[in-house]
Length: 206
Image (cartoon, rainbow, N blue to C red; front, side, top):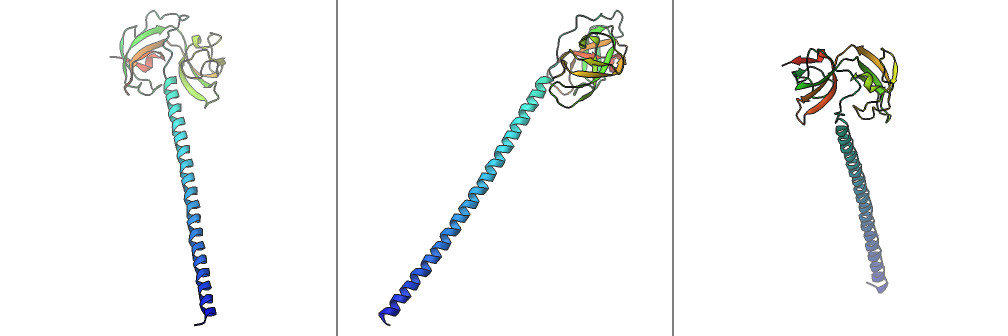
């Protein structure tokens, strides 16, 4: 075989080898980019999940914190003279205002001779409207006056988060009396002290 033929064959082998190497390297780089992109997507997804989870936990803790009620008792309401359930009466709660309330055992902490009000209000933080919140008294209104169904009032109490200062509409009025009660939630947890308020139809003596 002539020297020219050998040189030609050698050149062809070198070219083929170079092309094959380029293809392999190109595929490897492409796979690396794809893997990097997928890894980035997973990290982004994990970050979003962790942030969302953290936000939900924070929100839940905030809500739980908000559920700790104002345990003070009013000083501007007249104590009821002869209530059906006097202070200290052992009771079972029939109300469903709160989780763990219905069927809970407790005692009467205070009784007031006053009307009680159900209200619908817009929380001051712009959250979802609260409908049918039970119960408030005139001591919970900024003007501290008696009202009738349909009246617009500004709430002064902070029984719930973002209630104080909220604009509300009175949706129901009952004559009372208004009972403040201590009770052990059926869901467990700490004793709830001076919950305001319940009416007689929401209480049974034990």
